[in-house]
Length: 324
Image (cartoon, rainbow, N blue to C red; front, side, top):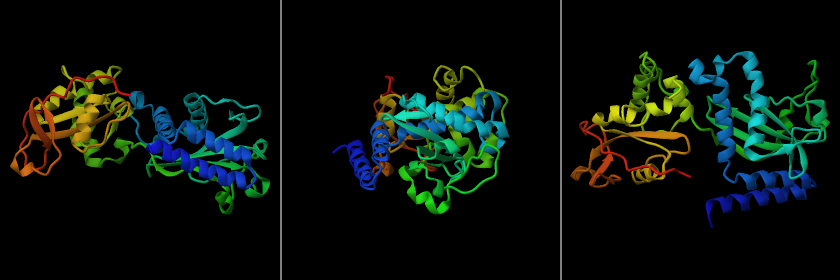
């Protein structure tokens, strides 16, 4: 059985429990979303891209949620709602945000877990509750039928209410505390981050990023934020980009191409997903590397270098063909 088939089977079992509890619409919406995205990868990518969209690193250099303006943070929920609808092709709802499997569903996002603001018109309807935290690098999404007794009282002008903590167990979780694609700039050390941004040259900043952040996926938006140039992808490639600049140090930069992913897999590195890069310093395999993962490049065996391996000219990566 393939992994995604196991995910779908597990989702069906959860949906059956919801059905047995007397809410067939909840079960059907749950099943439909999990069928569209068995592993949650598409959902996670929407959240990562939406946060990056708000940060707008290419134009602002920002990478930290706390540097957003209050109005920008308020707009996050609307962007998550819009981007999920675009990604999954949900139809417009009749009285709620979406129709999923022909059922009206409202969408609520909060950067603080449990702080979803539920409007009065959502009473009796299903809500898709979404949370993502860039500092914890986690996200969750679940579905809940909104009942008046589940909500806290409130006195805000638009009458929006929050869910009582003791009733969060009524949420049918699609995904709970899943890893959010990492915001590398936020989570790297202050010393490394300062070194990356020390230069006025976008190319030099990118070179330092790939030199200091190795063996970890680096997303396109991180590259865009560091380069702060319209032709940021050109700055990664060979012919004068970071791949050329770092070869003398033994560093290769694998992108989201099938040939590059095969190299990463053979070396035991994270596989670059769409729009991602992974850098690593390599060394020619010797006797002491007998137990290390190896890959053949330029007709020779190479391994991930360690502190005992002196820098040497890195091999060229294979010609790339488009990924997935």
